[in-house]
Length: 280
Ligand SMILES: O=C(O)CCC(=O)C(=O)O
Ligand SMILES: [Fe+2]
Image (tube, rainbow, N blue to C red; front, top):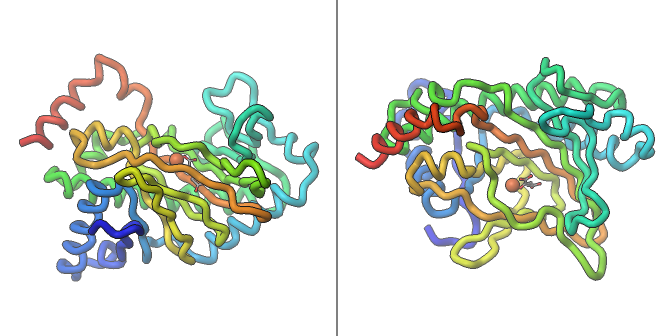
């Protein structure tokens, strides 16, 4: 490897029973990509292209055409642990974006837009596809780490803290272009799909590598939880979003999370066992 673009993996063998070579190849590329980049793209991942396209279109309608009063009708409930609903970065933030955040369908913390019609339905469908894909990627990561395929799934079985964000980045101006300042994700695995505007970049060996939007593909990146559980074998890479000039950018990010309890000291015994298993 060592190219200035992130690797792409064909996941179709994972949905068949009879393609062991294809499966082996997919695992090899994913394992290597997670060590070298912490990022890869997947194709034939099972999330329908039509649904992804519809989700971007509905997001454009919501963010670009609705007046602020309408968007603010789904402002987060006060006291919610995370601001599910419509949010806009504060004026003083260098990052110029607005976003809609949701917990799993059925969570009573969710605040959904009434408009455009079907937005809620599409968000819920995307959520379900991503949560399912998370289980698959988690099983591949377990195997890449030399663990039984259901290891991470059993360790990380509570899906109630997964989050989906529909993001709208405002066009860059002459003097500033930050969309999402450089950061690492704190969760387990993140899935992203972006429209054609581009702007997502990953840091590798001190250089920023653009993640070129490719129709239908999904970006996958490893978060801090997987970096720690893998004894730093897998990288939670620094990334950022640079806003393109004179056009908006739309993306979706899904955060496959770890339940908060797993971070407490009483529950850390599992982590230790996992770390030792990985080291052996
Ligand atoms: O919008 C994107 O492409 C990525 C967003 C991201 O990195 C994040 O929300 O953590
Ligand atoms: Fe991120």
